[in-house]
Length: 109
Length: 114
Image (cartoon, rainbow over all chains, first blue to last red):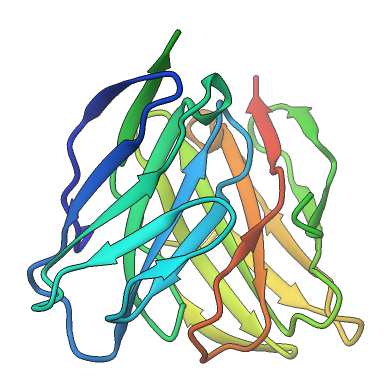
């Protein structure tokens, strides 16, 4: 079973920030949080990952709570091309990912 | 483009047959992972190889096997195929077997069993 829980689906207006939550209350001290997305049946695309500090790259920002029991992926200005299934994964050493059902994000015009 | 190459993109075959899926990892990546994605099961980890050696096993059936060659490409062999084996098969690679660096996925092979 996945170690994370995410909402089944979310909508976001084009141009607005999309905030995708993830609960990982049983995360251990050396497990990282990884975010991927999958558009249609393409291969999962890596977005961002972090341990305990907030992270930002050209695609998104990752906010991890101080107790590390939850995190939020932020897409600052969502576009129609961001419509996808988003997966939050916790993993030790980046191995053996366990994918849950993810969040289906629909960006609406 | 993730840099991970999978061939073929599509494969159609019949029950009872055997197929081989191929994966070339990103340049410099030593670890290769195989995943299966079916409609009712989601993305499931099958097996991991690191620098030619099996590192971890997931929900891989005994009818399935894999190997990683000296040039680091990997093959997933599926035999005695059943209708339920119809799925997308993804390969991913990462720099090492035990680091926090992310896995990067190929675009998959769609296997259809008739």
